[in-house]
Image (cartoon, rainbow, N blue to C red; front, side, top):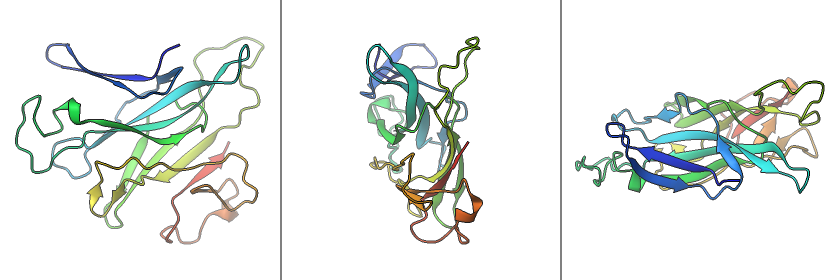
Length: 210
């Protein structure tokens, strides 16, 4: 019954430095293993990708079968040289900013993988939906929810680097009217729908229904 919140601690002292409220109600975060990316290799992480699960439905039939992916951007100042805790580098969590990459795609519990194509100025994010914590017995708590694997372009990244003030998101619809693009993404469950040229303008990513 809590909002999804991010807690930033001082690693040396263990003291709480900042609490970031995402304003997503009835939600919790998934794995953040290897979730940080230093896109410009300047020894300051630019962004952390955070999966989450949230409650959906109406009382009394709530279920924890929704979720998405968020980003925590450090908004580092590349020209900054004030490395104090209150300075203008990524060491100051007061500068960090939360935004949503994708929402309402199903529960996401595993960490987000990434790959940078520096030649094309693209940052690709890879993740899947679904959850499994324990066996419930003969009953399946999410028997009808179909899950997906995603590969999407980060809309806040370009040849110029990561836009630290960006909060753009990718759209996704679970029931496309055709087998062609659904929202920003292309349904490639049938490989015949995959573009022959993945570098074509407007191709922002794909998903596969499991």
